Length: 319
View 1 (tube, rainbow, N blue to C red):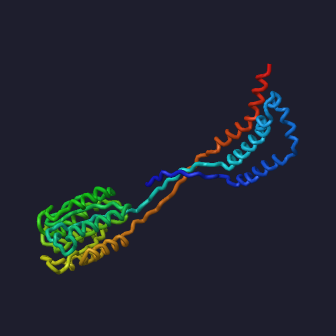
View 2: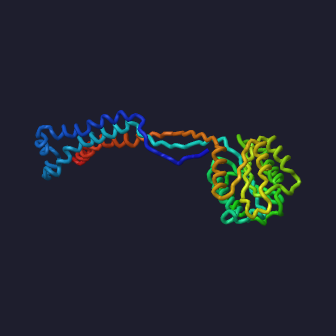
View 3: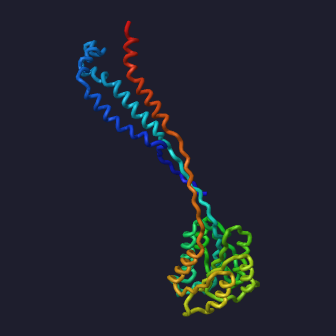
């Protein structure tokens, strides 16, 4: 669930605002009345006390403008201003993804800039950042395999773990079968709608107690799709990518095989996987309103009573 700290004004009955058109007309009508009001200045308590008529004039108009202001505020109150508080709830059928990254010594070859592993790490980080609705885990492998992170939404931790991968972390070799089985075991208990493994390697399986065929059967049995990516050029590769094996793994699990000969191609591969494995995201918006007309109504009442204050003071001051 995604909460939004958002507030905004709203009018429940805005048609009442049409009456505001009467306000300038009432003010104009008040001042267009015959000049008989001038005779009333002498009757004001202030004028009778010898004060200048201009000083007491405001008291002549005070009742009208108090009532006019009260009328305006009552219209606004009838329009029922409200303060709305909104929040959003994101319902997602998330995908659990295990990224399986080869860290064998050949991944240090510099046919990618600066080398295969560094290029792969940068692309993987971009892929992770672009999928905020999914849980993503990380498995590193060479002669053995180790789970660096179970499926998680902690993008900062994943970025740190990807950055920390080095080619000398594990024993030498390329244990593709062990790596696949390790990732599959991490996804076995997942309740996600879709479970995916993305395998990135530049070699062929040459070590490990679990053969790739058995690991592939395990993935297929669990309903896990495997996308396999072979990286590297023909130049200077001591052990060529086993394209036949990677293609077979992908086909048997419902995934796809890609061969990336350069950094640009590798970017494109991850972009295509990103498009193929879309997360379904449903966002529901909820709004709760609180009434805010009460201050307007109380202020209107105070303005209605305001003209009575001077008269009351005059009466109380008389002996």
